[in-house]
Image 1 (tube, one colour):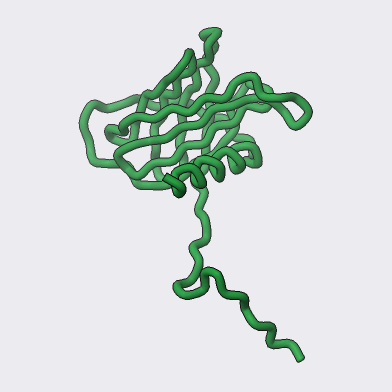
Image 2 (cartoon, rainbow, N blue to C red):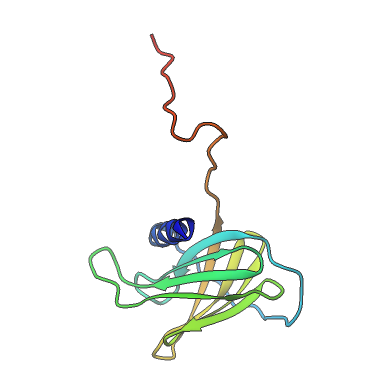
Amino acid sequence: MTEGVTRRGALQAVAWASTPYLISITARSAFAAPAAAGDYVGVIGGVPGGRIALSTDGQHVLAYVCNGADTDAANLARWMHGEIADGAFDVGTIGVTVIAHLQGDKARGTVILPDGSKHLFLAGARTYPRPKPGCIGRRRRSTRL
């Protein structure tokens, strides 16, 4: 549970710090092999301060959509989860829907907002460095004299 909460916080932070992308939507297939596991972040086109973050294990997806700018509080922030089929998914909650396709290091799709407006997004894959075994909690000694 703690790892899931930490991952959600990291995705939310990375979504706000991501660089802008905008591309098109792709179709969804009914059956297929699982998508590659990973995390994706991007900007939602046409939504001031709009950000999206996706995390998948290859079979399930956790999506976060928000808007707002550094000077304005977000008036939209939604978490969604669902299943992936052939790298595609369609998830939604409380008036917000994300339809997307994962392909390589990109996630492309559409966000449908409560007012019915549709906005395209392209999210890039993000990787997080893993600590070397045995290094957690240790301080590295300085070799300077």
